[in-house]
Length: 137
View (spheres, rainbow, N blue to C red):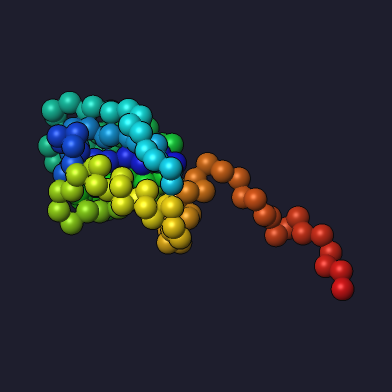
């Protein structure tokens, strides 16, 4: 699965989603992780209520299952969730590699329900209740 990180310095999750200069994207599995791409967004990101600045960010992370942020506004969070991306807020700046190590360990064990749901992003359900055959007794 792909995970994005809102960052100013490309090393830590230290940015508000709307003001992030970078969104760093990694591919992660229980076996490991690797850097995929850094999306840069320039300098003109001051808080201004301009919702148009969110569109390129949402487009950049459209195939991610999770985005880690230092903060996210209500309307941005709603748009992220509507894109089937799970926003995760960190309480203080945290190194991206530390988060990846922890996430990899969780993936190797028993992930919590929200993470299992995020893992399913882009996959078809493997079981459809409506396609059930008659139950034979």
